[in-house]
Length: 241
Image 1 (cartoon, rainbow, N blue to C red):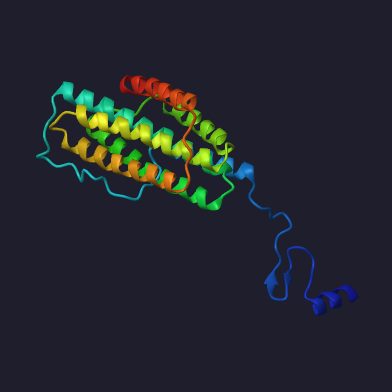
Image 2: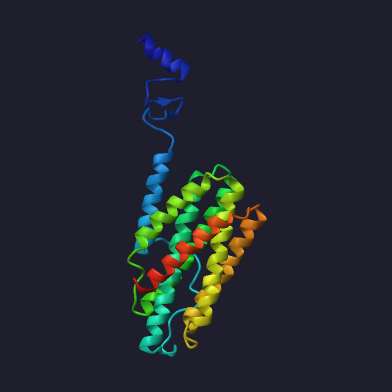
């Protein structure tokens, strides 16, 4: 009885009871930690890989129409190979930026990385839609590309903010070069793929500029060379598989 009176006067009570008209916080409640963040990223990776992750912007090619140019079988296979390469590039960029953001302690830079990653999701969706239209498929090795790039992002995040942004700037610079090359080799009549690739290139230029404006440091030549080598392996493989 005396204990009940103390609760009534002080407004306190046993864990889980109402205190002063307000529910007490459960004793088991805890703050989200690093493991929670990793599990969240694992769930997002699955949605990225199966194509169900949500995107915001509409496809720059617009809806498919009955009067769209019909590609020959050879042209369609070549266009599909290039769009598959582009899709893999966006898989890698998405994973790289989210890996970097996961361990980034600067909230402003973290937002820059996550914003770039969100725009890469738009690119993923556009490439996937075009692959479907061309009756083709994404790379069968996408889980491998995602895991490797996410791990690289985790490593890059520990190199300091300037080099962290340097990875972003160098990634976008190399992607720009690939997209320019694809615009030169895509079938001339494939206007839908061209519109998608053009918008992707413009977005990548914006990402690179943003990274440089925030203080991106040039990466050492051996690192840039290693990135180019891995890019060649990825593009050669993804074009076929």
